[in-house]
Length: 441
Figure 1 (cartoon, rainbow, N blue to C red):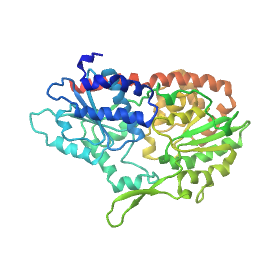
Figure 2 (cartoon, rainbow, N blue to C red):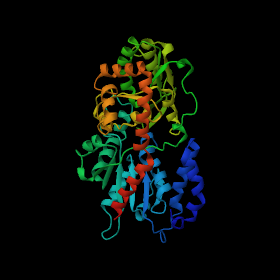
Figure 3 (tube, rainbow, N blue to C red):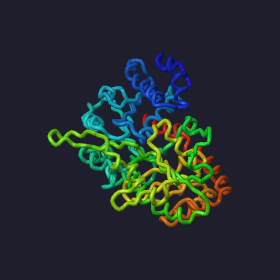
Figure 4 (spheres, rainbow, N blue to C red):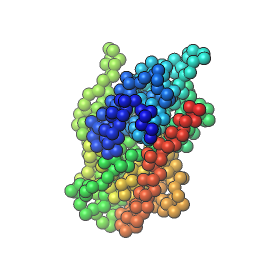
């Protein structure tokens, strides 16, 4: 690293930013780093700066842009600050376009759509930035059951997503399934794959103590972690879990993590058309309905036994990985066969293996990519006892690993070693830097 190429602002903050980024323990840590990269705009000396300027921008902070935008840019600056001048913003300033060489945007907002209009009318003879749209969900094909579908349509997010895919110079995404989907809208040659990757040194991925709930002590734990967008999948997942419970030869405990105590529901003002949020009544929350049931759905506690189930509230982006430390067996289940689900990346599978659990998954869509890319020895055992083609196999695979404790520990270590290496942010950052360099030359 040639520190002489950094500005005084970067030099003054570098040690502190790298220290915080390494462990990333709290929301305040995240804010400190984001504020630094936002202030990079204020400290840009455009007359003297010789490094290419890369602007990373998103209109909304979510789990997807955490992996696709923010963690990559943090690490890119850590490794290549002398090569690029890096700015982050969730409220892009159109003046940035004049000085940017590359604009990387994740999830389109109204301002990002306007950027395309500006680029289309860029003055002839003047350098313009390369616009990269990064996306890891099929955002224009949300199923009717998706909790955000109504809001997505009302606010035009689906059309914004399609517009970005069509009009951006380049598309980066997670795998071949999404590349195939997006090629229906635009030229496949401009779509490139940059895989998801993780900062495994972050504290949330380090297992320090026994993490299982008290109720699960001395039991094999079977866990699922995610957000309410997977509510339809969780309803369908009860069926194979009931089959597991019926055929158990030993005690097991089921954990569903990431269901909020209080849900927010979207309310549209009939006069103004504006959408606001308010708290949902308890009996309407996702957590309550999964536990106790609703309509014709019986509920997890009734079918599996209240003493055998733990439901856990949402954690932040800096500590949600702690959920996985509780699991012996991690579930990645796509029960709803929608276009949206088919395009999902294999993050849930990877996260479980990373902390030493065995992952069981429905072998469909983006999850097939994970199996497809495995080394031969891992692929053989995954095809037999992990990748599931239907609910019957899903139940059977869970039971296999519950009943084979010694084998579970052997293979969980082998898969852990594989994902910690293959999906390490350090490795993928180098791929991203090579990608940017090709666009700049």
